[in-house]
Image 1 (cartoon, rainbow, N blue to C red):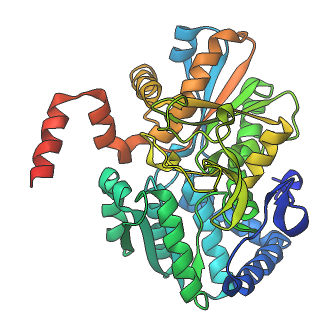
Image 2: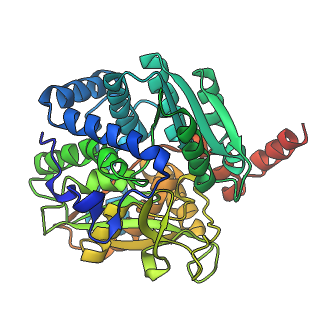
Length: 415
């Protein structure tokens, strides 16, 4: 497999078109320069990529399979539907691809502590797992609201030895967890590495996270050619910050015949103020926040709007600069899926295929299932199932109106 993403090579100072860069306090400049040098050195060392792939094969069940959804295909008609199964990774999501890669880089740099932010909790669990495996101290920052709705993941982070810190600032979600991480890093950079979980933040994080997540797209491209004899007509992925989307899209960027579709959180509807759709429908605008320039949900004064999504991992104000650039170029199309659509898509996929996508991944299914009937039976489409729904059990039960679970949740809250 190729380890170089020529399409994602940044220009001046880490920019992709007009997006990217590194807008950080002066105290972090030297640390970021050190990280860029270490990453460039590792990326130029073929042995590093081989070590990374070997770890993912022996520790995280790679390559993850591609599953043909025969029942959904028959039900909907049109394109044949395939699913890339990142939910089968160790820890239950694509997040482990990035954290194990960054963990190997941390070991190469000689640092002994890692910190991370998390929204849905999957990145937190993956980081805590990596830290346990590599013998690193670990602190996870998580918005107080996200801790409440992702309690199972918090439990496992704690069991893995991580210190989970509840962030009570602002909206108490992912945005605020990232801010808390940046404050910690500014005070502890000598022995600490910030394992940023998505393709956002200051250069080199967008490229570095995409580099490790590209293993998804490299595998998927080869698998679709082997299974179907052709490339897929469309590839769908949910987009919060955008790491799973960047990872799978990386395998198909040079294939003009493959349309790439990112699906954002439509929340209560993009015509309301309760959503997290930055690029779909042109709701966001360019700005600078959390160390990088991209498209954010903000007002004319640059103040960030509150976001809303049933999926904690998509409840974020910005989108990765690489994806913003690809959208501006017309290479990636963006759509939005509402909470109600996501719950119905999740129910359909569970009942028809026995797959249990995370609420984040279910956003990608919404658009794929809408569009599949309008394509030819000769076409194949590929959905990236970036994670599984174990972590969402309480949220899903509430959304599905299961009275037994509602009663259980009320009794749990009362205790």
